[in-house]
Image (cartoon, rainbow, N blue to C red; front, side):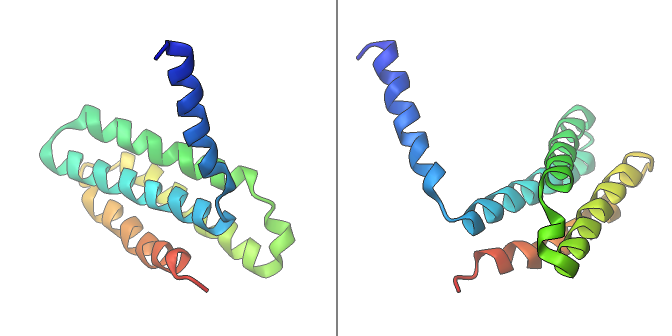
Length: 124
């Protein structure tokens, strides 16, 4: 198989993910956010600060995209609450970077995200 064929097959396989339910996409994004924060917490506790920074940067990137690219006004009061939720997580992540003991703040974010991720995965 040529490199071009391999790339085409890879793109075709990836395209199947484009037809997912928007709720599934949001669930996957939030689960990735949860993983990034959990990994940052674990890396901090292990003293691997370079890894912690990489995972925290990934979480920050996801939160920035979520908080700036969704049309919160279309969801009314629920949208406003969701915007505050993302901004609160982002502020907590920023605050954690300024402390020597980051684990409690990472855990606070994980505790907030866990039920949200679970709710998104519940089939309606």
